[in-house]
Image (cartoon, rainbow, N blue to C red; front, side):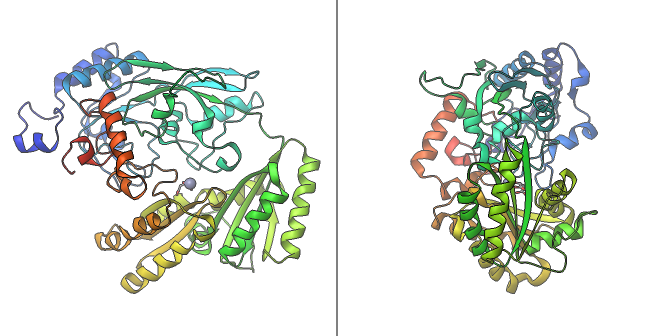
Length: 493
Ligand code: MLT
Ligand code: ZN
């Protein structure tokens, strides 16, 4: 913890108070005197200061672990009065440095707020605290025949508050749509400590501005999400998974059109990955196997169907298989024989990001692009980087083809500024020229706060900054995330 006298230069650059020992004492008071939930030892704080990939490293001196909304409120009230910067943190599985400190922000971790408040089978919805892990909520609602309309690779660790704050997309957005439609209500602690109770489980509520939408995808820059009400549709009774090998991305797009037409309402996921992605998974993750041995393909697609009648769904899937085979759209395919086999097929797609992490450093880009042209960027970037770096870098393409979302990843042994300069701003300019989005689902975090202009015009950014100032006049909530520094009166990091 710093002393009282920070230098003027530092204060200019970081207009927030240095956290003192007396602030940690105030947090202990806010948490009912429980000093075990205010972490100040460097070895305890460390894991909250660095993100999942080890890419974004801050220097927090204090982590606070509230158990109730009231405790969050008291902590925020103190930070607001003292102008202390705060970063709310969920499962710390983010990919753009949105949930970790940039400097010595106080980390407010929601991990102790893990109650499932209610599950309503008749209405098809659940209310939970922000720290509930996605997979735990899924198990709880599954026991009542329902499902959470969100699924991602990080489900075993990511928390509902974090999912909402990043507007996480994931593997079944194609079926259930974005969280902006599934989240029915929220409770949020505002930067000044006030509690905004927007927890409702109504499907329809047309009483003016839909304020909860402000906090969905705000990445903790406007307040701390403490409770989530979410719709929980009936779990599908019949699920099929199939994996196909294809010779070109154009064939993946052709097959998507067919899948939409022939599988229709039972199509619940359409995910693709390229040869480089599969090779990396097979090399990095033990227990994985080539799904189509002896038939190497350039592209793979995982299709999932979810419905309520196994006979009907199987008939539809069979008809679809006949068409894609007879029209030679696919080289080959395999249908999951049972749950274990289906899980193994899904693993090849779901765990690419884990394989990338094991392989070393990774530059991750999460882009919305016109589906038919989406893979061109992978090819163009490969051609651009090869003469400069040869086999030192690998360019991988995978993602949610059914949602027009490309995950473009550049894998290398170590982070290297020369590689980064060769990728950026090239990738962002390419995306802008396609009228795409530089963040399809991961958010902007600290990584892309300064790049927002590639996807939003100046007027929109100005309005966002006006909203930020209205809710957080001192700018203490997650500084340097989402909005460019200059737009909210900060000096560059
Ligand atoms: C995924 O779709 O696998 C996730 O968004 C993570 C990633 O992009 O690597
Ligand atoms: Zn994704």
